Image (tube, each protein chain N blue to C red):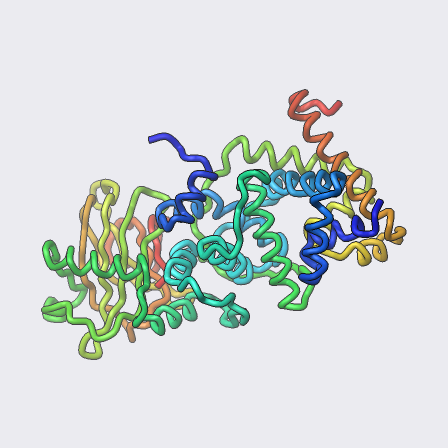
Length: 187
Length: 245
């Protein structure tokens, strides 16, 4: 049996195929949970976020348009929005919360070599950005601030924020592309 | 740059009012720069997400979430109230109990499959006293059920139910990997953080069994480990399968 694409699984799922839902859920469980956790710093809230995401997807309250990009980007966007909404509901900024749940986790599965390499490369690429660019990536992606809040926080004119964000994103993209092209060596 | 272009970040972060969101989407149709910038931001989401440290997924999350999602009605409104219990298991179980009169999707089919399968192939195991097992599977109340999750090949389901004020745990398992000489599968019921040895299976492949529950029958989750001897005070082996009820 060949592996089905996310897009075809999505369409099967929307027609009510529970197995397709389960397959998609399993494929993205760890990625989405770690992603949600980056916003909430809390296992319980992260699980709520993931549940809300799949509830919306299964019940068609959000719709994926294959013409507008990849399923992975889309489901991460939905997860990010749900996590930001969750934080706004909880009316708190991300904080570090130590949870005492000995043995309360599914046994971790080793990440694939490729995932580990990607993780290290993106972290390296971010760390090579200028400090303001790193701040912008953090504020845009993980804090979900408004453009005005970002302007205030970084003491930038409102009109400049978007341009700076775009150049930060392009700088990061360029570094990642450079790594893909040149192997480990940063050009 | 148009005035509307300033809303790009707010659109991306979902902080616009619905009127402003509609207006920005109309703007997107005509502003190539904003479209490109938005696409760039979205495309970076995957590498950024993959770069994050992995957070272990809580035990039984899949069963809880898929149970809720597949049991949800098409018209169910978005959940407004965040859960308040420290661990979701209890509330999830209460929600499942409340919904017993509506179709529960896969959970009900598991229960049906379990009952049918036990009717045909059941063997009953008792930890204490063989007269303690129910003669029939007339359940008074289902207190929780779900599918096992496993990093091994193991598949199966578990259900906790009451009958004549006694609590029982029904498990059905398949694809249990072969055991080494002297090993056994130990079932643990877990309440809070405390595991209690509650039943053994000394075979591989398929197994179906009903175990009387020790204690008051209040169980959050069931886990299975491979152990060298039965009914140790604490698990010594790794969890090979688990289910939150």
